[in-house]
View 1 (spheres, rainbow, N blue to C red):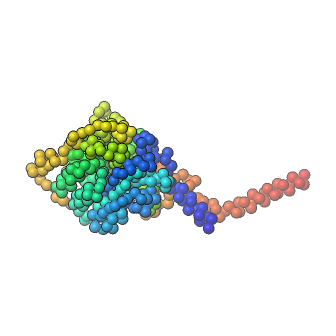
View 2: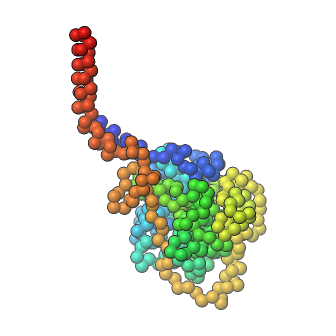
View 3: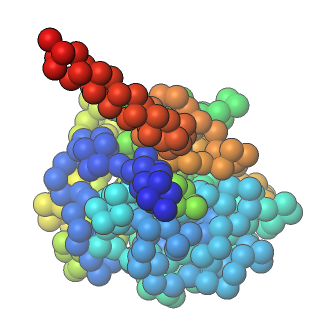
Length: 398
């Protein structure tokens, strides 16, 4: 019994992260990761569903819905081949790692809506599902909508016009992944290209934009840590990952902190403050690699700037100007499959959890090591005792 309990404790220890291991929190400053940060703000995570049984996400989800048609009604059952994705995204926004020893979110005090769509579900009409999910999220009280997903095209279906306009008209901030530089698709894709949407690209630990962590182009709004970070993985695990999908919830978390700090600020105010308080990277001013720069939570939260219109453009104006003459892109499933997790802490499922030696738990925390050593412990103790007694016998005889 003691052996079993000891091994269980070691396994849990091997799957924990200290606050100091969250390099992205350290880089972003003391305003992030505080227990009540983002309190009173609701963030809708439109993704593959959130595993609410994960200790890092205990009591964070206050509602949800399933639009994939294969999940449970409340949207909290991971769906599709990328079912882990929504849980990892959610943890970077509101992870309760200070209590669980896992992922600490940017805004642990924020509450989440788990809205599942059929990302990775065969023949799933994700275009229509996302449109419906956005409208549902607005009606459910979302202050921020996180879209860590992208199509394989910069254009978007007509159904998204109405949905995104509905969100903007109801003072909701939308944050979307710029997409990842893979297979030559190095330019941002929708929904990041929609006017008014905050488009996020990812940075590594050296604050460099790297391949597979984001895209480049004039549609990139800003950058945030997104390469070599960790997230909560279904099944009480922690996994390492990279991509603009990881950078996006970090920005959504910062928006939650801003809206909690100044509840009277409009969505336009929030966007204006974000892009005017960034930490400049790359070429001076705006550039196609880092956008306006890296998000700076301390400066953004302290800002009191106001804006009458969304500085990232007007979707309404775009629709009036272009939609009538544009050939509508057919509705259908065109979402890009997310980048798979890179590594795991703890004891991952061997079939679904690739390992990376660089980010595994230290060798001395491996439960298998202790499983092999423990049976030999009594023999080792007896051998050491015998040797000690023999030594004492020699001393007496002398």
